[in-house]
Image (cartoon, rainbow, N blue to C red; front, side, top):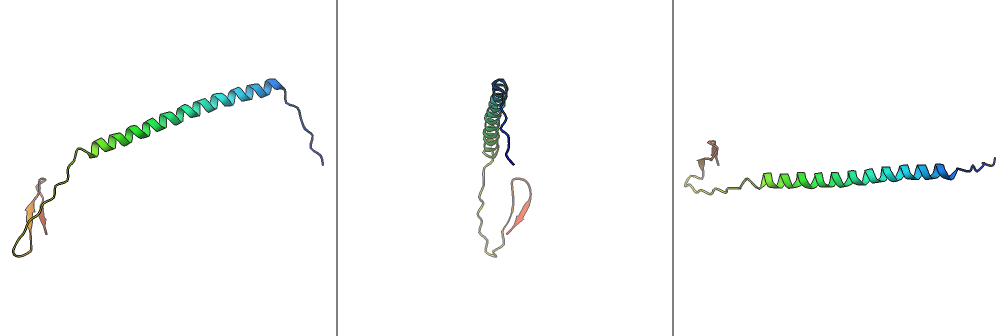
Length: 78
């Protein structure tokens, strides 16, 4: 069975091409927006996490058990 090759009018080809160009442009703009949003949220998380500081507490005791009350008021036993 031989398949018949059909001719497509040039105007149909041009209209499909124009439609695909518009779709590609929209997708490219969407990629740029999503990239900017990703960078913005990452910068926001870095700013949020940089507001806190780590505090290291060292103590010594003859018995080996250390208890201290932290900044939040909780008693910690080691």
